[in-house]
Length: 153
Image (cartoon, rainbow, N blue to C red; front, side):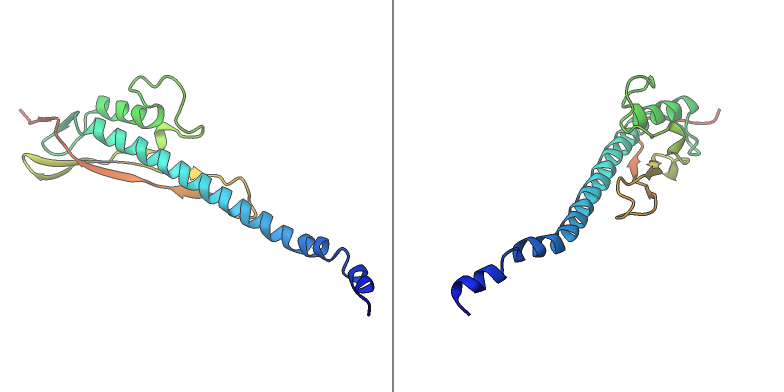
């Protein structure tokens, strides 16, 4: 076979190979994008929960671990909106104050208490081929309470 005939028979081979590999490359790129979005969303939620726990740790808690209702409402607003007035843009479009979890403070001793703030956020993927189900992102932060302790009278 001459060199010229061999080149003619291999014409288009690169195009066929590219056509075979392209779906895998697209699938891989979609996976990278989806993982990046999920990680970015989790990072935003973690920062919001940390800010909420920091705010709550300076509030008002009873000596038995009961959190003041006003402090709890304001903490939920800090997590969702980034402020205590529940105004402005939410940090994530579908995040609700009802998704913020604030259990009673953990009382270790009379002077040592810990407050916990968490959130359960349903992450909806862009590409259902990569992640077919909704995933619940649940960051949680516990901080030592440094605010005012209200003792029963």
